[in-house]
Image (cartoon, rainbow, N blue to C red; front, side):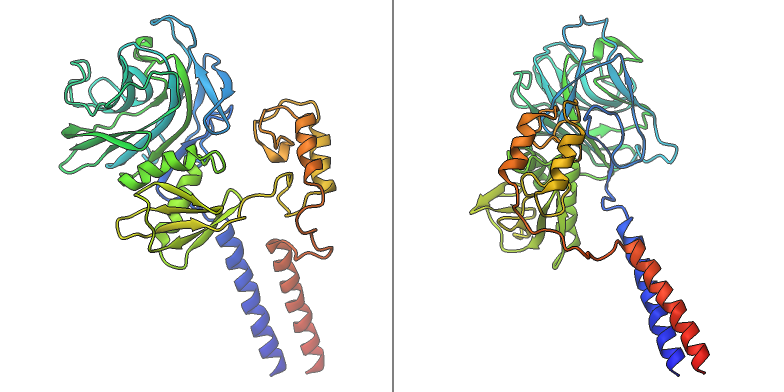
Length: 406
């Protein structure tokens, strides 16, 4: 009897720990299909399809972290810098409903300057700058006919400032449906009876393989592709979460926040070192980030539901290894990367100052916060994989013990 009870309990514990391990490796974002941070890389943070960098664009400071500067000062017709992203074999980049979003900073005033193109002549979808205005261009056969019929921004976007351009397309009848453009999270125009085909390659800066006339001279950061149409509130929140200088959330962090809201009451999760919770009874405007007393509130639907983060929930300055304490381990990280150029803002590479270089400014941040937080317990709880081995080992010992006592 004792054997059966103990063995049963140990078996349940092992199964529970296996479940913990499986949950810890599950993807958190089901709707953000591909996300390109452009922090000196064309890798897809969602792991669906990496891009290929062409022509050696410069890595510069971005809206969030780093960005790529494409074709600076290069004449139209001679531009070769872009990122090409081949269509995934599983067709993930060809959903019936789609959202494309990207940050761009440019003074280019040419015609049909591509920001993110998934278009080939008369089919696909494109975020573009035409003369001075932003466009979302589904391919409807009139790509070269002018801007009439395409959703267009209400004001110029080539002012040399960062702007978030977001375009959506919703399929209603075959490949036909409405297309909508947002600039900085503000609805600009919606045009109906647009056509979305199945263009294959996606290009950041424009379709250079077709013609270098369509590549933009500008800086591009944080590109995302969703397999659904973002709501007005979500489109606005992409901007407000990034534009807040404390949060400065990229598109991936923003989607993590949306996931908490979509999961419903009782949901919470850590996003970039800050815990967010599902909440109701919010106000302040759809997608508008409200900060009060160190708390953040974000209303995401008209019923007043959304998310909030409590005061003091941010990461501890100087805590480079995220163990909740500023001490010798953090100093060792700075020492290990001292004098090196690293990814801007990468804490594990010793750059809390965010300038892309590990030096005195980073050391000063660690020194100024030395001893803050709670020191890690000397006998901390082991990692789930270690705990699983421990539980299973105990189960085996219990089995041997009970066999001997029978």
